[in-house]
Image (cartoon, rainbow over all chains, first blue to last red; front, side, top):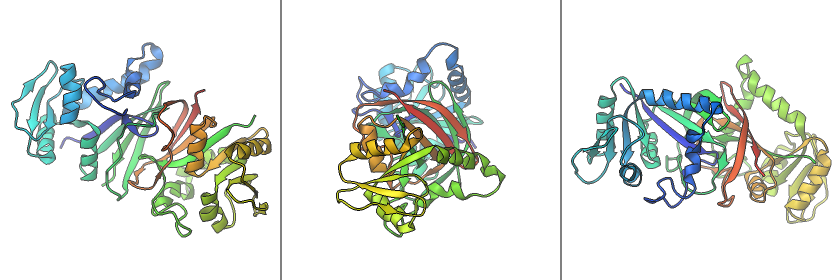
Length: 192
Length: 192
């Protein structure tokens, strides 16, 4: 079965967006800082680009929340992940074809979205966009791995990746930590 | 001048203690998980013990809050850091000599404690015990370096290290990331 991977660029204080997310600021105010590492040029960025390529080659399907779709993808009119994408929503809606992927709107809940995404991903992995979907999957024991691109900044404000996940500790194993000039790449397995 | 180093064992979700800190649970309920890495035996622990020794050799003085003193050190009747220690408090009180260190109680505020600690540390570093003192130092731009022992667990509850530090982003540089079988050692410099 396809694994579920949560992959996020997170500040050292745990934020994956800045505050006040809107159409104009899909990452929240100041949240673009978290993705700056992707846009550095030059040889000192080779570790980061290698990691990004490695991930991209693994992505077989994407699950995302409606808000991420609205403020992010719909606004950009495309997705960074060229793979079948499943949007959790309350309204029934026809599939939507963007340049890099087809979007299926799933109104039957996260388990249905996950089942469809896993089938679509086949031997690749399912990744998640949006902190609240990630939290739901973690809380229900449905996440297999967590990749963190740890950004050396304290944002002070925004949405935290790890929040509202219940108070039963979740054990992880870190099997890779790679530092680059811009960020630290951490890879965890979730214990069962 | 002696540098100020914040060094903490932190869960991936940002907690440095569990909830409900008390005399019986100085690290909060379940918070001892964060220090478990120090007590593993066997050769797979050599990276962690090497890092712990490296830090211990650097510590020239300690600043801590009154609550950390009350629930931790006073209760254990000693400190893990054999160095002059300065306790931030509101009441005047005579110095206290424990087995490994002398405690000075400072009622004139954090700047006075810092000045005394830096003088005592000389060419070594000043470290901090207690998240709220660490937050105050960060918020006032008085911290020079941050060492995180990142523990592969999501605690879900407790006190966060990086909280209440204002909403102006603080830029850092990560100059070392070392993974061991039990934790990831991260070292940051705070940008000025």
